Length: 176
Image: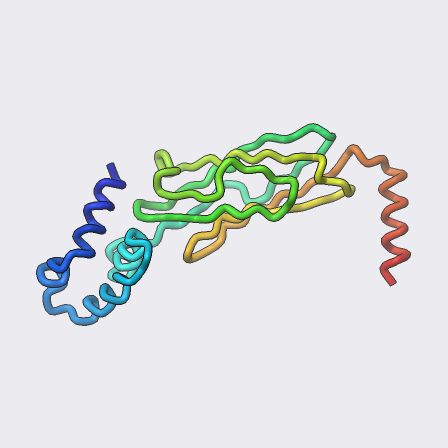
């Protein structure tokens, strides 16, 4: 329903009548609108206009948990990250992974991805790519305005303590 309303609002925003009947003698807003009309993303332009005129607040993405800690024992891990959308409006975010061990089921999140203001991203962690005692990575939700970063820390319990200590000594020796 909201997508239909936003579609109609974008259609009106891009029509010639919008300036004539809605903006009338508001020259500054007419200039802002004309600048936004060149935007490839019509919904993004409408969202920017709404925010500039203080008709609404920007959509913010949040999560209850920004750090995940796992002990890796050689078995794949499946988890979900729940993202909340702060209010109504247009949002589009790229989902970026930093770490070869992540497998995700989506590369972007849009308005349609949210149900009742929530979106759940399934995350698979492949332990074959975690070869050291400790590893870390991030999943980033990148919108036009901001990044929401979620950190993952791993302790690999499949590496024996002797091997780990030897690796640490070798690292310290070659560090100088």
